[in-house]
Image 1 (cartoon, rainbow, N blue to C red):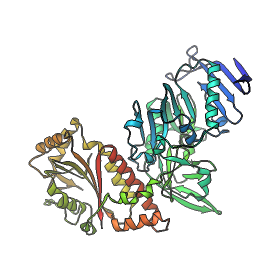
Image 2 (image 1 turned 30 degrees about the horizontal axis):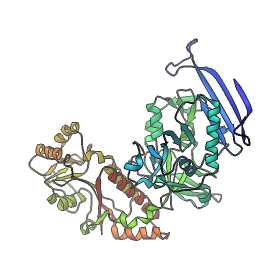
Image 3 (image 1 turned 60 degrees about the horizontal axis):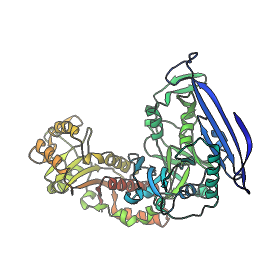
Image 4 (image 1 turned 135 degrees about the horizontal axis):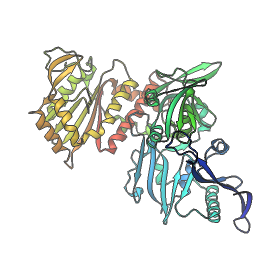
Amino acid sequence: MKELKTKYPINQNDFIYYSIAVFKYKKKPTFIEKSIEGWEEEKLAYICLVDFQNHLVIAKRNISGIKDFLKLFSPINYEVLTSIFTDDDTTFEKFSMNNLNIADKSIRQKSIESTDLKENLSTLGLQSYVLSNLRVNNEDNKVSLSLNSSRINKFGVKNNIEAFLNWSHKIVERITNFEPKSSFLSSFATPIDYSNEKEDLLPIAILITLSKLYSDFEDNRIERCFILNGEHEREVDIIKVLNNFERLLEIEAEEKNGINHYKINNKSINDLYISLNSHSITLRSRKLARLCIQFSEDSVHPILQYINRTNSFIVTFDTPDLVYSNRKLFKDSRLLSNIEAFLKVFIPHSKLDLVKSEKGSFTANSKNFDNDSIFGFVENTFLSESEYFICDDLGKEWADHIGLNDESISFYHSKYKDSKFSASAFQEIIGQAQKNLGNLSPSDNQWPIKENLWAKKFKINKVQTEITRLRKGNNVADAIEYFKKLKVYPNLKKRVVLVINFISKVELEDRLSKLRNADDFAERNEVIQILWFVSSLVSSCYEVGAEIYICCKQ
């Protein structure tokens, strides 16, 4: 059944045209490898196009292969789509959001739900998240919005073409008559026009995010992965290949024939670039273009096409408050305006100017870490304020040191680097801290492993030392019981303390001031990345109710 350009009157003065096709088709079930006669699944599909002159409404089911057609149209502006269904009386029932931060261990996606999130969701930290999906309720009329695809789903019966056409007309009227306004959703990161900013953008780093790919694996949508070499195929473990990209990668500008090319520095693919196109940013690589994914519906996509289509990456620029994600450019205006608050987490220590290594040197007779090492500094500085102090370094560590007293549980993460403003070293220690935030309240099944480790003496580089892992306290069993007792205290403080030697607070304050004033300086890119990393950790710690401190040089 099909109808083409059928005229439909909305009222006495307005009319629209719609086209619709409804059909059956057969396909091989996804759970069998080869087609078997008589074993096909029969499905119904439809597509409806509603022409409003300046807007097109599409309704479809079981329809694929129209991506090129959709590229002919511009999606509804993010700000418009979030505003036309919200007013002062709107209740927000569900948010799905993506993190704009480039720290690789930060929570990439979150989904939260309540009868009204406006009443119980703190706006602190929301500026680093961008909404991807939300569900709103207006006088018991529920609507879900997919902001990346401009998809609107109205809850309720959907089997009446006239009702659909009239509803579409109301939505297009709202879009046409849109006026900007501030709302609860203004707390999230807001997009700005990429096309207007494109000429001034200088990309400096990219984080390739693989959460969408992992979701497709979990949903059994991906059948196999292979490298295409001419007519020959070789199956590969794509997860192993892509593991090399799951960290922040630097972007280097290369000028060829007067044109800037932006190369992504990595150890695996030497021809990976990003392109700043007229309306979007994409990745390109001849080598990755041969790495393919076959989906359960038999479609095959090069991984590069998949990453670009799902926009599975985040790009930062030498303008520190700009970030590109989900095909949009976002501005975090609070990133630079909060520098004074940002600096509050840095605690200067003069003794960190004197450290020469992370752990020091060892012999079989060593009973303590060297005083001029960061581990030695941590123990000399913080051990006295704890009832129990444990060295948890190496293996599946929660932290390098753990301090326990009646008021707090503290995780100490240490990092030595013989350079200034090392963004890579900072990324590593931030990642260690973020991935272990959950262990501030460990589950009971984790204790046997820790009891076994903490009862041993410290061994490193095949040297068995006399350094006990329980640095202070009666015995390991008592330390574990004390930890268990502390974690149920209602007013317990959870503290995350980074101890580093490659940043001076005075120098950092100077560089951040130059950054805010748009001055040029040697470590500009590194400082921008450090700013994003720390902002991510502060936000993550806030979400689990933990305090964050960074001990550094003066």
